[in-house]
Amino acid sequence: MNGNCTRHHTDHGGGDRTTGLLDEAANPHPAPATRAVQAGLAADPAYGAVMPPLYLSSNFRFPGLDDPPAYDYTRSGNPTRELLTNALAQLEGGAGAVATSSGMSAVGVVLNLVRADDLVLAPHDCYGGTHRLLVGLERQGRLRVRFVDFTDPESLAAGLEQEPRMIWVETPSNPLLRITDLAAVARAARRIGAIAVADNTFLSPALQRPIDFGFDLVVHSTTKFINGHSDVVGGAVIAAGDELFEEIAWWTNATGAAQSPFDSYLALRGVRTLFARTRIHEENTRAVVGLLAESPAVAQVYYPGLPAHPGHELAHRQQSGYGSLFSFELEGGRPAAEKLLSRLRLFTLAESLGGVESLICHPASMTHAAMDEAAQAVAGIGKGLLRVSVGIESADDLVADLRQALSACQVAVPGCGADDADVVRLGSAAAEPGRRRATIAGIG
Ligand SMILES: Cc1ncc(COP(=O)(O)O)c(C=O)c1O
Image 1 (cartoon, rainbow, N blue to C red):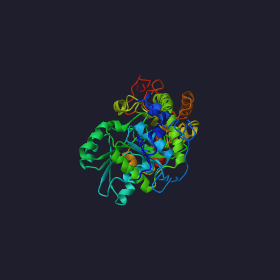
Image 2 (cartoon, protein in one colour):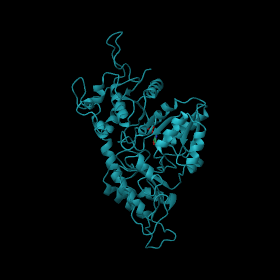
Image 3 (cartoon, helix red, strand yellow):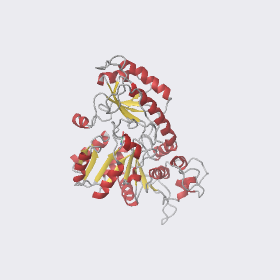
Image 4 (cartoon, rainbow, N blue to C red):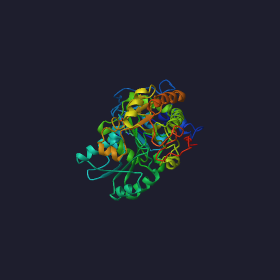
């Protein structure tokens, strides 16, 4: 099979070029953050460039008729893209990876693995674009899909009984940050011979590694945390084993889904700072969520780092951090949300997430607009819900901006006197008088 991508130890042109200093005997087991910075560094064969060069060329010279080069044509393979896929395979603990033109093309590549009669079991609150593609492919008779609530054991068991060929997981889910038990789903998939796929976009390998829990494939919209600067649209699929890697690589080449070298170069630049950015994203999120959880204008905050979030314990077990995405509902519903949005200065009203800049969006009319109202209702996406992606600006500035915007949204809370109006409301927990501070610990 002709691939466009790399194995953990590449067979295109030698391990040194893509692994860089990491192959040094003196540094056999670097920490993930070190891998992210060092993958492919200082291995340029031409000039010894510390940062690997960008190879834009669409084609490569054959030294002779029976002497094919390491790369022949960029759709099938490219040295710059291979540096990125090698780094991603290492960070997710996979055998190999492909980099694609968008997160959705990564989803599309994976869905090529199922046949017309095969069932795909997917979360009822999966990313709207994934939902749209699954429904569209089912309409064309290209697969069958069933959406279930992966956090409801009965709903999940009913789906598994239908023996899906593929189980698709997104955890935390979008936009309510529901947490799915990765180990339990991987075990169920193994039992019924299904391919287990995790969309790991929301956490990145810096905070969660689904392959460690038994998943076969990991999907990313690298547009988000991996690139991290909101200037690339890209995707990736990482395979746990060689066989699936070969298949994924074949489909990526056959369908022309591979990422351009330029975008791969930028995405790899993002990988270099992934772990450092993640630390600040999380630090800022703790500050912002703390403010919202204490505000009388806020009805609910959905963040797995809050002890009252239903997925808190599970997140603590399977993640190495709670991430920097959360959503919340204001007491005043959509009118209050509109008011808040009009007052915010540092949180840009925009889709997407995972960039250095703080963003806020209205899932019902933006990210999840592809779902009809009934599907939104089933997924718990209300009209007053707002989702936030916390950036790496100063935490003090973000908190001050939110505080001034929230002051415009204060509503009288029925049953609350002036003195107890700032009762904390957290996740699904009922307000507890006297409990004024949200405890959000990081994961050690
Ligand atoms: C969880 C998730 N998966 C996949 C995608 C699709 O990625 P892209 O927009 O890069 O095609 C997105 C986009 O927002 C997403 O949030």
